Image (cartoon, rainbow, N blue to C red):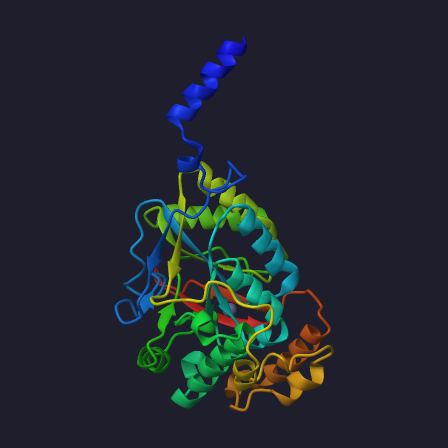
Length: 340
Ligand SMILES: [Zn+2]
């Protein structure tokens, strides 16, 4: 029996060297991250077949996971724990005001190897109706707040996702001039909808990935409890179905790791850290958006303030949501977003 055990160990060692097959140390069930793709905005300025003809050059059964609207520590941290356990690297599109309120979580995201792009300053719903000046305020304000939270401009990827996927020629031209890639998505999982369950999210994500050539850029939101519950199930199911996770990274050098506190000069330039202090509702109020909101959404400005107040009190209820509606046939869809 002893000899048999030794023989089996030798056989296993010879056929399956642990170092070569272990995608995630300590977790043999992990899906891991199989490879990275470098995304140069000059070569690939628009990404995602929901809205564009171009997307990432993924192979069969490859998926890129992206998260919008955070960070919101309660759920963002849960998802980060799961991603770390599974050695999965994702791409985040952070909202400037959320980053300003939770800079520690922003740095955790980066230091755990995820890519951080931006998703505007205050997640307005009117990009498609904005002037170039308004677009610039939202884009640059978001980048500044996320940069301030990270404390290093090289840590922010030139990737932007328009809130609500509310694209316009003005916004896309402005972002192209700034050499920032516009990310739409290949698949959504409706995880912003009220009442959606984790199982619904997993089912919809898989259905849509499989319907689109078994690959794609998946859009999720790390501010929702159902999404946090869905992510471990989704990763398990993807692995069982033979999928691999790919991470999209920007070109050029990125810092390996960020210090616990960002550089003060960079932080102050971005008006984020260290101005974010305990009970920062007043600070959030004085730092309210300068650009006028679109008429249609002006009524929501009060709710923006309510959101800032809620964030300052560190309530964990998710605030932003995106809603999709099918306006055409096949793959043609229109999107908009709103604050709850
Ligand atoms: Zn969003």
